[in-house]
Image (cartoon, rainbow, N blue to C red; front, side, top):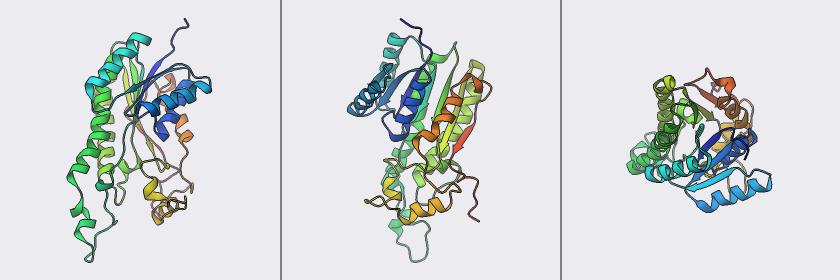
Length: 273
């Protein structure tokens, strides 16, 4: 049996962006454990990867808010592969009731379409999924990096640094992820565990497609506005995250911790004028 190079765990692994990140890690020679809520999606991804020659995967159906299920997954990974070196916290998402139908409130606005109509339960759910759903897997999986060191990569968003109109819950939750990334990087630095994040700009995913495009694929006004404020004038492709991920999990970034890398086509740098 050949020596295992590194073992990575990816949450939200069946998603548009994270499935691409799984493939990136496999291409780097890692064994990858894929965690997600829907087993059938994970198994479909696993089978697809096998047809491409990637055999070293495991799948686990677990909600990132269910710590006992995450611990079961960690035990199985250790029993099979003996180590955990990398964690990618990719699980996340938004909730329609955590957004406002209007961008700005005016004297003519309906209260229910403004900030005053936001659903507190939806905000709580979005915060739990994105922030607590990053914290709990990190507690579970990075614990097994103690002694050997390792790397945690969180998935943030442009919404963290630049709050997006309408998207109240998701913007606040991802800002919490950024803050947590920096805090934990300091806390775990003496243990040789690095904690960084990647902040994608606008990529078309299952979570945001309804906000940006019509059913026929044409752009909604909001989607066009985004492209107008993205200097590279396009949406990102999942593969655009590969180079940042490879860098953050490699030895080349061994002295880098507590950073958030924007992969956004220049969105954050552009003031709109």
